[in-house]
Each structure stands twice: as C-alpha cells, then as structure tokens.
Length: 190
Image: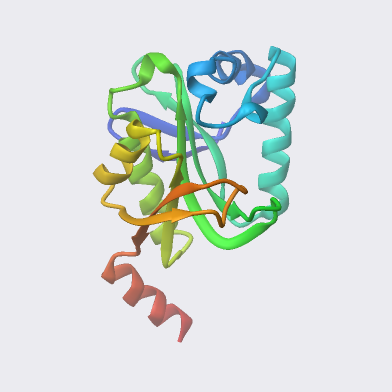
C-alpha cells in the first residue's frame, strides 16, 4: 500500500482494487454522488468497480507523470471517504490537454466535514512542490454549489464559464503556484 500524502485526518493512497472495490462501489453507485459526474461514472457492480480501479491504476502507470486518482482514507476509521485527483484535463474529444485539474468525489456520509478541502489543499501542494506545475485548475458544473465552495476555500480564482474541457459547459477555477515555488522552478530549469 503506497501512501502518497497525509494530513491531520486523512491518508491519500493508491487504490487497492482487491480490497477497495466494495467501498468504491458504495461511493460510485450512489446517484447523489455521481449526479455531477455524469452517467459514465456510475457503476453497476462491485466487479465492474474493481475493473475500473484496475484500469485507473494502469492509466496512471502508463502516464508515469505523477498524476492520477487516489483513495482518501479517514485515518481514525480507515474508511475510504472518497477520491482525490490531479490529472490532465481532457479536451472536448477526450484527449489530454496541457492543463491540470484537481478534483474530488466524496461519499455522501462524508459531505460537509471539510475532507474535500483538506485533501484538495494537500493535492495542490503536491502538484506545485513535487510536480512543479505552474498552475492548477478545477472545473465544476455551475449547479454544484458544494464544489464551488471548496474551490473558494482552496483560494482558487474563478475564471468564468468554459466549454474547453469534457465537451460541456463548466465553471473554471485557477490557482497559480505560490511565488516561492515559481522561483524554485525557475532556478531548476536554468
């Protein structure tokens, strides 16, 4: 089991398809959770969820660029409370762009506890300090007020509406790398 990141209450770790499929299925079979994610995110069985986790891990290994989607685990209970992701945004045809997004999906029982903000903050830090990304975006459906509030708590700047990603209209939020990381990145590149 690979722990990527840790916060006071959470572990961010790789998915383990054999043991995590049931908890992931509980998240992604809930229509309230997948409401803003689109129908393709819904799963119909624990086995299809396991296969989806396996395919996600394979994509991460193929990209080999430090991006992907990880399980968010509550330390105290060891319960998987959701997914945190940092990955390239797809264009309207599904092809990767040069833009990176942070995102989160949480099980309904974990809504309103600050987990998305906590995981998002540590993932932004990872994107800037480890992956040396100059900017990270978030895209949110305009009616997803809870995710909009998370972007605000993360200090992300609203840019406006865009049709550039996923082939649908979304609200775009941006966070530039803090100055000290930009300076460090510049020194490394020179």
